[in-house]
Length: 223
Ligand SMILES: C[S@@+](CC[C@H](N)C(=O)[O-])C[C@H]1O[C@@H](n2cnc3c(N)ncnc32)[C@H](O)[C@@H]1O
Image (cartoon, rainbow, N blue to C red):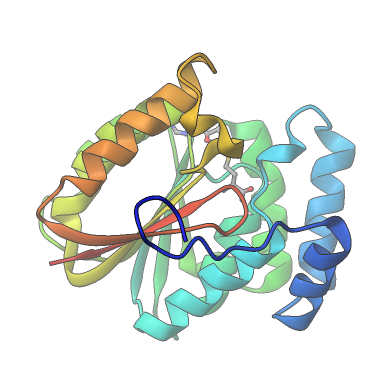
């Protein structure tokens, strides 16, 4: 029990326990493993940006669970999360994914093609704020995933919430930010996440839970 009188049950994931968790859930297939390795080889300084395998499995699961037809992603990078999202879509579904980098998303395009999902993925290159503002204002999105620059999160949220249909889901990555979210001196990115978390949890348009999955994931259901 914590001082606040709630249970503080949680498991610190050692490397072997993490490997066990990934293998016992829905482990990444050969293509996802190749994509993660290719990203590491081509962009060793940026490869840490790829979501964790258990997050990828969760994204596919959530798209299938919700029966999402239209999915929106902010932050494509080399395509790991977009591939997981696209694979969850039913026939006729589509994923709109946004990034600023032609170079990084070229890798994504290759892997979408190899996975046979390229026909359901629309890549929009440009600042996500502009891309999101240009989308129809109506609630046409079933599920959204936010995983781009952290200072932009509140703006992305404000653009996305009205476009998600009632009952739809918004998933946000890095909401614990390597535990630095609690550290007032940790710098701009964790501070941006702290501001985002306060903003989202006070938003009456959604009900929201935070999960200690990987770097922290927030799930918000549009009311
Ligand atoms: C954490 S990575 C995304 C990782 C990806 N979801 C995956 O699983 O591999 C963040 C991405 O956001 C993109 N990004 C950064 N600022 C952006 C902006 N203003 N608009 C759109 N994309 C942006 C970066 O180019 C980068 O590819």
